[in-house]
Length: 248
Image 1 (cartoon, rainbow, N blue to C red):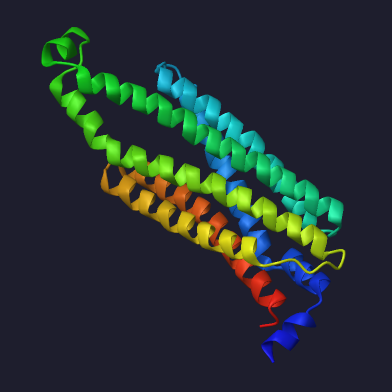
Image 2: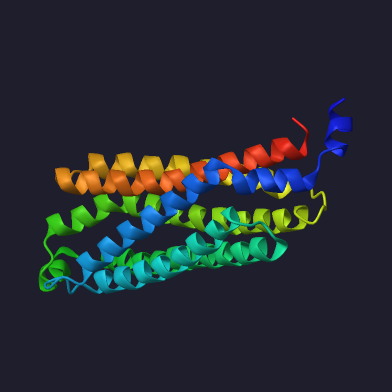
């Protein structure tokens, strides 16, 4: 019976259900909030006194994320007004750009931190003193390593999620013309986005437990919850589309 129902599914109706879903609105709104928080973080990094090389890199990557995420917000939101194959393809391209930006950011920052910790590992106490870096500072950097790894894993998963979402949007562009696609990539996107959301919440708890003040904890929580909302919306959208295609 289920196979008979899946054959009779109208792919246009499944694509329209995706486009009109309130979860698509929620996902885009959470992404817009994440853009706003990224802009606020970028403004903090250009404050006088913040001259660390890592802060300049952070500023650059914040701006890259901001531009690509705003483009994704714009083109994905356009689907709410009218769903055509061209609009789905533009939204897919914007999603791909954001995914590549996130992956490139994670890769470059991973290389930077790997170089820094490789040098730190080889330094003796005398060399640390010559660099005006006390043993306590070095130990603090080592204590930060698990959080840094978790953050890089989250960024990489975010990039993969948006690249998979790009494939989903491409399938939806075909569905709006009446083609019935396979659900493999939709299932994969649902799984990876769920994992990404969970890892993001884990990073939030890790950052809050590390301390830093009430305001810093509140900002971290709000930022991570907005990001988790993006991937929760992505997961639910993929699951509902998969169910519609299967006639469930």
